[in-house]
Image 1 (tube, helix red, strand yellow):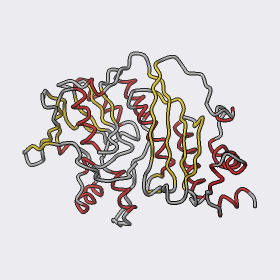
Image 2 (cartoon, rainbow, N blue to C red):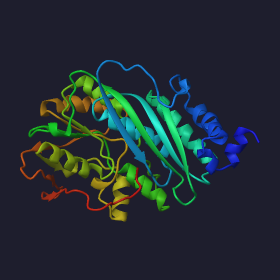
Image 3 (tube, one colour):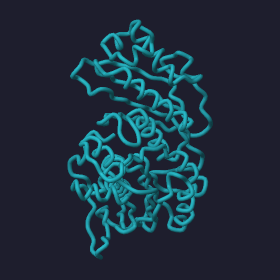
Image 4 (cartoon, rainbow, N blue to C red):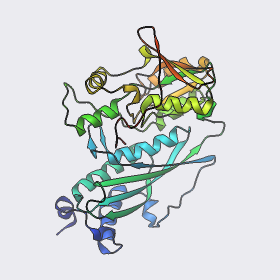
Length: 342
């Protein structure tokens, strides 16, 4: 049976993780064929590459999403975006990625190839190669199809210092676009919910947008991508790290009408729903207008908005002024609103 027929009809078995011929063929005929690049071609278990001058940034992220394929993406693309964005939130330029796959016995090889092809395409589009990897197989019933862990290395330009502890009273809070798109898209697919229009994940690589923002305003204080726990959790993390408070304006926070309607139907608060292609930026108030111009000129920031400010607060609270003139505490997420979301 030729390689392509086997990938269309076959499934992962324990020999694919056994270190022998089957594993070598899987790595060569599937992973290496799609992820091929000069560093990966070296054939080492560890990648060897030159690093440009500057401070190095590293991040790692595990991806256990369910379902594996969803409107707007899949676990392969998400695993690339997730680590690239973690590096970008430090203000760094991503250089390279590694990927580790844990496969469940019986997982269709056709689905695995689809995931690897998506990962390869996403990495190429981002300009960041996957330079090393690993594959393990677990017995049927001891996994959930496929889990992916990616790690990344980036370089931080001189003069850039971005940290959640750098938020100070008087600074502006900016958001790059609508919230809740990813989490609602996942839930609608998971539960087979149908809406008038297809809800799509916002999964995207943000390092290009971040590079434009830093070029315009090198003194950005904080960047954070509001993934698990959503915008509310990201802002609470910043408040506690900085020792300040956050004052939000409800009417300024962009939420797509379809997402808002789905959240109302499902009893969810979009402030706590995961995003995979949005960022929070905290900057000096005088720089907010310039940064919004830059963000809105980028495809991933067209709906950027100023949503609040950093304030003095010894209790480090996030408070939101509501559309009705009142105020409410935007507290930490209690429990897990949407499990297996990224």
